[in-house]
Length: 239
Image 1 (cartoon, helix red, strand yellow):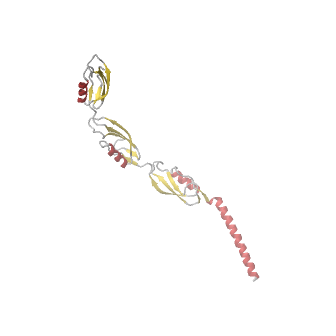
Image 2 (cartoon, helix red, strand yellow):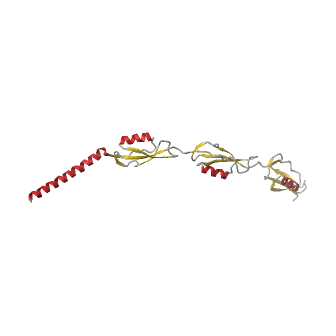
Image 3 (tube, helix red, strand yellow):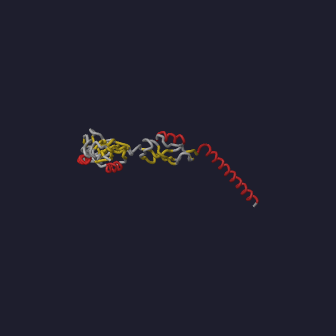
């Protein structure tokens, strides 16, 4: 019985000693380079990223390819495990690689209304850029006269398309005659016939002429006045 107990005790000591050697051996094995940190690969060319992983003892796998506005074609967008994680050498690191910016063709929006043009650009992944407006004899008000980039251009998604939008035909213009010395009522009637409104009226005492005679006007004679604009009058009064 005593021999059995001595044998069991010896076996226990041998087991614990072996376990200790195994623990310290594994610790030394890990510290000797069996595990290492994943390098930061984001933004690197995929060829360079694979070389870095191979140098660190990992296996690279391109998991997927996506369009990206932030990374050029062939650049690493993200990877898993992420940078700084500690892995055993030989493990796989999964890469997401950029296909570059998605391209789209500029739609033809000339002749469309400003609202329709905005919808068409949005559907194509584009946006409205700067908008300029001018009068156009043949293009109705609110319609697109021209666009930049033009129809059919290959653009990156999100590109801004500048528009030139019509204000419609230019308003009628009239060269203002000299209205001074005429009765105010006559002048007002003349202006109305040309689509021009009477603006501010100022009264000055002038006994040398009949009351309500136009003494001055602004704009002055010879000015081109568009329909819908105003002409200010200075009229006489005797008191």
